[in-house]
Image (cartoon, rainbow, N blue to C red):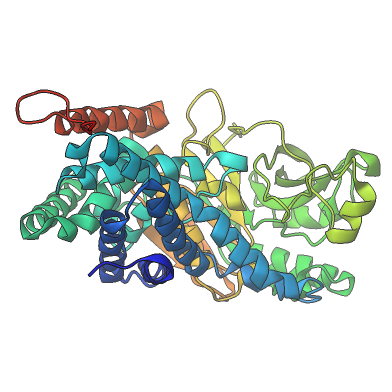
Length: 506
């Protein structure tokens, strides 16, 4: 059966939407297989590169519409001034992101037309996997990037299958993932081979994972206050919220802690040097320890702006170190050209944060060195540590209250786990309404507080691994993988006689 026009586009849209249901928290992996096989079949039957691109775009639009639907939730948080904009913005974003799978399909169709041997049963899977991976990497970088739900996240339910990210990162793992999911399109032998590869990868991943252990690292306390976003910034709630954070911080075992950790923008006000609020916050600092809190940071001069920051506060109420978020969310945390267009940005948004200068690694007495990551920054591979010496752990503070009980917070957690696998570093994650977690260097969740739970987690910082290949060389390992794959395609692209295949002219 061959589909044309809107029927092919409709099937592509549906297939992409179904594949998105394999992402956290559902993990319906068979639907990812259906989606991948449909992608290959639609590519096979496309008459040319333009048609393949349009079908890939329809597939991607369905995939990202379902995978990113949770963004709508933020528009309905009171006062919900822009609620009506939510659905069209998400649909528009999905349509824009859909061009990345579209480009992958179009480029692969062009290459198969130029070198017909690349359209063979096995070569096409490798060809599509390569173009998919390149397009996925571009999606994570172009126009500040949107590295949400890369294909390899379908394995988030099985920690051993995530360990390949330590070698090639989540994009490299995605290359293998595409070929495995799409293998049935190449027949039963390819399907059996894919099953063998999954079993082998699971065995290998399990074998490299050390037993889960707490180690003898410093004891830290994660505070999850579970403050609804609609109440967070109301002036009448400020004192109550800070007092609640302090009370939770000082519960039994407080004197044994090395640090207390609050989520992103935990204090519901701008924190400035010398502010009286620092004396109150200092009550949450354990003896000879620190309070590490997300906060809106100001300098006391209104014309200098405000930063979304991680502050380190000592017992004297002094800010002894800080990190300002580098990778801000477009339109969510900043309005492009907001200084030049101040009247307009004030009308269409709630203001902008300033961009931080650089990622950092903080060296604090009595704590292992740490690289902070604020919210959205954790979705970007090879961009979670500061320059210089490798940190011993990662700290992710976030506020996913904007997205309610949608899939968004769980997908955000999956990204955090992949960064730990890639870097070989444990992560402490503090979230306002969840999911707060202690993640070891293999991506295992050792302790967690689920969505809309109030509570604390006391846990020692897990040990780090030796630096992983991806942690050492970042996307350099992905480039090597792609070059090897391109070399294999070069062999496919030669005919049986060893001469290069091509389209004959008549």
